Length: 215
Image (cartoon, rainbow, N blue to C red):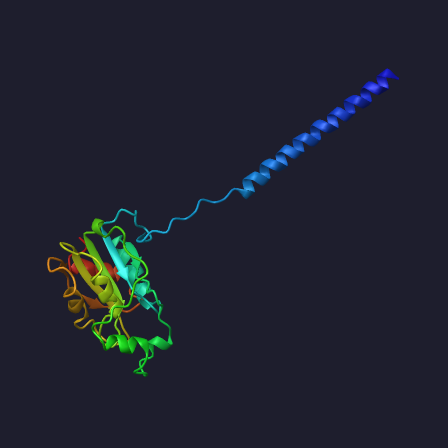
């Protein structure tokens, strides 16, 4: 009888140990799956694909339809540059860009050289960049007024500057010179040019070599 009782107690203890082991393993798995992922820190100027994040060149772009964004990304890749998007406080809608309506927002802004649309973000570390490339669409033959806002928001003294643009048919015209007039007189401006939105990084690289931004 004692022998049977001892065997029964041993069996009960074995079951208890097995249950405890399974419970501990389950708790460990739950803790691993519930662990919060590190929060992503949004920077004012993000490294472009292939850039190390310590570039001395910055590509700044404004884009409503995505065409200029595509060009700016290719430019950043060609230059191994950081990339910064100008984001308006009040985003532009398709209606705002209606060329056929003289009362639309963009038309009214482009006809008034004093307009300065507000920008919601900023380049925190503008001083680290030696070279800045501006990318923008051509609106009514000019750079969008928000580019004027950007130019008047920073000190570009001693920096090398260049402009590239997209358009539905216009060339860059005087838009780069007009932007240059709003910035520091000591900035060195390279020749600007209009490109198709789908221009490759290789083709942009050839252009940047011609104007001395790449060796």
